[in-house]
Structure formats: C-alpha cells, structure tokens
View 1 (cartoon, rainbow, N blue to C red):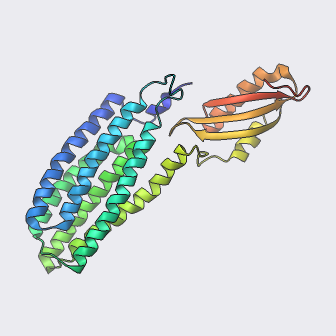
View 2: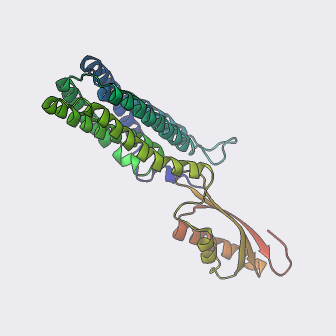
View 3: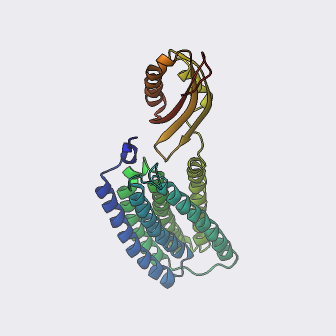
Length: 296
C-alpha cells in the first residue's frame, strides 16, 4: 500500500513544519501585545481577540504535533499507519473553537448589559498590528490547509482572527468617531458568530471520517454498479467503503465470478477501476465462484 497521499498539495514536510513553527512564534508574541493593549484600553474585543489568538498558537502547535505523528510509518500496532492523528487534532481544535465562540457570546452579552469605557486609539493601533500578523499567519498556512483537515482547522482559527482584528479596528474607529462603546460587544458577537459557523461546518467532516463513513463524493450503489461492468464479474455484495485517513480510501467486497480462472484478471481490472474512477487505492477483494460456491 502506498502512502503518498500524505503529501497531496503540501509543501515538503520540513518546509511545512518550518512555516507552522514561524506562525506559532509570531502568534505568541502577538497575544502578549494584545493582552497588554486590551488591559490598558479596557477593550473586551481586544482581549477576546488575544485569547483567540493564543488559541491560534496552541492550535498550530497541536496541528504541528499531529502532522509529525501522521508521518510515522505503519507498525505492528498501527498497520494502516498514523494518518488519523491529524483528524483527531482537527476535531480537538474545532471543538475548542466552538467553546471559545460560546464563551465570547456570554462575555459580549454581559458587556452589552453593562457597557465599559474603551480607549479607541489603543484598540485601533494594537488591532492593526494584530491584523498584519494574522494575515502573515494565514499566508503561511494557506497552501497546506487546502489538502489537510488538520491544518485547515488551525487555518480557520487564524482566518477568523484576521477578520476579528479587522472588526476590532472598525469598532475602535466607531468608538472614536461616535463614542459608540456598545460596538465593542457587537464586534465580539460577530467574531463569535464567525467562529461557530466555520467550526460547525468543518467538525462534522472530521467526525464522519473517524466514524468510517463513506467518502462524501461517493455512493456505494454507484461504485458497485460500475464495478459490475468489469468483464467476468457476475455480482458484488457485502460492499464497504470508508476512509482510512483523510486521503486514503478503502474498499472491501465479495466478488462473484463465473470462472475461477478469471480471478487474477478480474482482480486487476477491479483495482484499476477503483483507483481511476473513485480514487480508491486500497482494496480487499474476496472472490466467490458461481460454479462451486467456493470462495478465495
């Protein structure tokens, strides 16, 4: 079985790891600056953004660790390899995002009920720095996020932070211009809404794979009917299709053929069709023969 799927669309392993390490470092530095700015300005939105930003650094660290675990070769205890480590990390990071989203909603409602003074210029300046760092982090992780649910979960953390920083800047300007201190809480609610929306979209995908669900772009009946077109195949039953990890798909089925002598040619044809038509590169085929009722 091949494991080239771990590198689809990614930069080299070392290059990708280096990008993540840089992103972690700049996010930690930004978090410190935001907390200091939030405390001095009295901005809940800025402190909320700092907490979220710290979670970005942690999310990136978790993604990095999972990425390295996923590259560990298969062994006697993990015969399919360790690729699902990245899915576990994705579910953890997305669950954390959901918790943060609800926490921010509660804090924003409290602030709406009891508005606090906010120093607009401090908010705008610190959030401007945050936006620059957030965009840098988004740039560092964008390519890897296209083909890795693990990195995409961390990317969502950072993308939502970039938009949150933009929202904080807008809120700060409105506070300076119109003295609308309630905007701080409104911006916090918007940040929370964005976080919950994206986490809610991504987490079912990761859970579906961990639950050995059929790949979303496949239909078992369509795959089965397609394979039945292979010459020598009479019927296919007991079909199972699932994700071994995010990229590697597996097929298992009982293949009924008329002539035992066709088994090898049918096997090659089925595996080629599975790979070419459905991107399934791992298969377990059990053959049954119509003439004697035997299996092989």
